Length: 220
Image 1: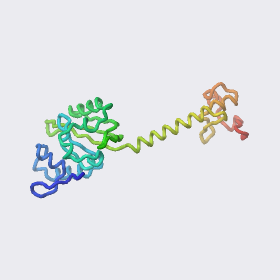
Image 2: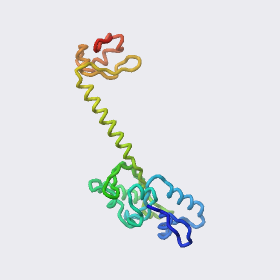
Image 3: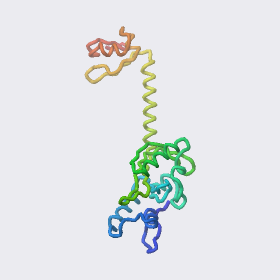
Image 4: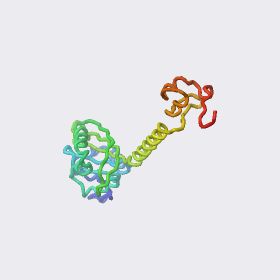
């Protein structure tokens, strides 16, 4: 979606600028330069950022948020962020996180969130309170898509589990050593071949593979 609109003075304004100005969230007029830096940071931030009021309703968002979840601000303005984005099975936990951020806590979580059309993505979420002076207005939530990282971790875990199955159940003797010849792992088949009751016993008993004269598949 497009986050730039024309203000009354025909100057470009982000969704954050427009809604912050209308609700009284805007910085002090004397801090115009700092405010411009802030708006640029929000607009160009690669993280999806959404501003929530004290009831968890969407007040503003940046372009990255629109791109990540597939909604334009005009479609979701005023909607409860948890009802919009959270899968039913995670709703209770998400509501607790939102409430904690609104009460003034910084919260972090790795969770799943729902995009337009119902597809879900893995995200790393950070929620921070939104305060001006001593007054709390709501909270910010920031989202980073970590779906590829999660898939890679799941694939690695699956490969490790597959390797463990092959290692532990092979009829051949298999071992892993350090570069100086100390055992790291020994499978049950090798331990039996060498007369040990368990792999752990063999690892403790044999200080050096070469010195022990272990023969596996005809090689010493």
